[in-house]
Each structure stands twice: as C-alpha cells, then as structure tokens.
Amino acid sequence: MGYKVVVAGATGNVGREMLNILAERQFPVDEIAALASRRSQGTEVSFGDKTIKVKDIEQFDFTGWDIALFAIGSDATKKYAPIAAAAGCIVIDNSSLYRYDPQIPLIVPEVNPEAVYDYKNKNIIANPNCSTAQMVVALKPLHDRAKIKRVVVSTYQSVSGAGKEGMDELWDQTKGMYVPGQEVAPKKFQKQIAFNVIPQIDVFMEDGQTKEEWKMVAETKKIIDTSIKVTATCVRVPVFVGHSESINIEFEDFLDEDEARDILREAPGILVVDKREPGGYVTPIEAAGDFATFISRIRQDSTIENGLNLWCVSDNLRKGAALNAVQIAELLGNRVLKKG
Image 1 (cartoon, one colour):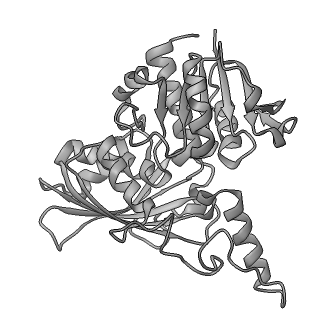
Image 2: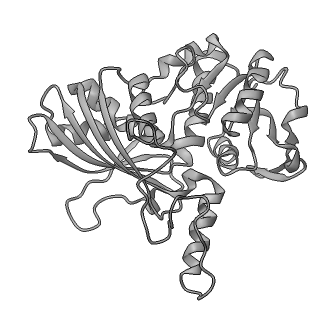
C-alpha cells in the first residue's frame, strides 16, 4: 500500500524534477496528481514511464490525499497550502513562505530529521533555500564533532535558481553575443548574465545584505544551531544548473583536515572528491543530475586557530529543491505515515 501524492507546480523546472525523482527513487505512489494554474490545464508531464495530464489547482480537492509537494511560489502557496493542510494532506513547500515560521519545521533530512514530527503543528513542512540546503549537509557532521562558531560563505549560484526565465536569458544572451544586432538586454537579472557574474540575488535589505544572503543566515540557525554565526555573499554566475559554494568554517575545537575528510566521507548525502591535483575536485557541470552534495578542496585555514576551508557543489534543482522535498516525503513515510 502506497501514498496518494500531489505535485503542485508540475509544469515548472522544480515540479518536473519532483516527478522525476519520485519515479527514480521508487517512492511508493498509489496515485499521483499533477497540478498547475488553469492556463496549464491539460498539459502532459512525465512520471516514470507514464504520461499524466495536469489539473487546475483551483478546482482540485485535496481531501483523501496524503502528501502534496508544492513548487508554486509564495503567493500561490499562501492561498492553496492552508486549503490542502486543512483537508488532511501534508504539504511540503518549496517556497520561502513558511521557512521562518517557528511553528513550521524547516527540514534537511540528513541534518534534522527529528523535526519531521512537528508537521502536526500546521500540517505543513518547509523546504530550505537551495543555497542553504547543500551547505548545512556539509556543516552538520563537522558541527557534531567540533562545534562551529562562524561560517563565511561565498556562493556561485546557477541561473536555474531563477527559474526557466533565468535559463532562457543566459541562453539568449549567449547566442546574441555572436550575432550582431541580436543582443538581449537584461530582463530577469539586474545586469547581463552571459560571460558575467552578478553579486546580487533577491532584493537588498536595509543592512546591505541581499535577502538571499539573509536566508542563508536565518535558515542555518534554524536547521542546525542558533549559536552559529553566518555571513554570506551570494553571486549569480553563468551556469545553467548547479550551485557552488566556497565555505570557510571556524570551530570551537581544533579539527584536522584529514579527520574532517573522513567525517564527510561517512556523512549521509555527501560524496568527497578531493585530490590535490589538476581536476581533482567537482564542478557544477559534473554535479548536475546527481543526488549527492559534493565536497572538495578540504584544507586547513592557517589564518585562524581552528579553521577549515572547503568547496561544496550540488544540483540546485535536486538537493536544493526537488530531491530534498522527496526526501522529506520519504521521512514522513518511514517515521509518521508508515504505509506500504
């Protein structure tokens, strides 16, 4: 016996990836519903070797459905998530709407699986920001060993984090660079993204941080430990899929780089590829399509007493969004709902 599962936002990048991952990981689905806005009604999407037609979310009755994976943005989630939750369907939401609500668990299954039981507060679970998700997977096993005091992270985030429009803009601008008169002006991003990097993701806040940077701080504290200090610089780069992060960590206790490497090799969700030779590390193009968070360039930081540097890469559409949501569904299945 399996579950009745809803994927809301099934025509978007993340929604399609959710359907793919549910099938790839053989999640026990008895019945699946793909939802989107009315304009997408009747569109066909793939689920394993099946093709299913998208239904209008506005007309959908969530009664009797077990789990709903939401990838529809904050505005639509604000309208439909409470409806689904009130009908008894547990919502796993990929938007930022509920992440900072103290009554709603914010979960990365490799890091804080015990928080899943708090779904009962509102029948809703939040998925973290893509840049946070991969970082906390790397930080948690190290924090358990030596307790992290401070993290300085610089991100190199792909355009798929901005949705299909971001990917299209990079593609169109890149083509336009080679065709006179076909240049494409920035629309989705603040400046040209092709052959460029942009040190702004989301809006600026009063203290000079962007909201993306603030999210990494707030979410890391909620998921791992409120005492960890985090400072972030988030940068958009001309990569289609895969976020990269340069992470500097200061610990309360000394942690040798070799021990850290061993800890990370044993940690769930992580693959260590760390050879001190040309090409002995993972780049975003190699991480695309993979489930793992890859760690490379592990080394001591000699400028502080207890410091390490590392390089962290993951597929943001997977671990940063769809995969994490499916893993939360698996957690619910294994620990709470226990069907099949």
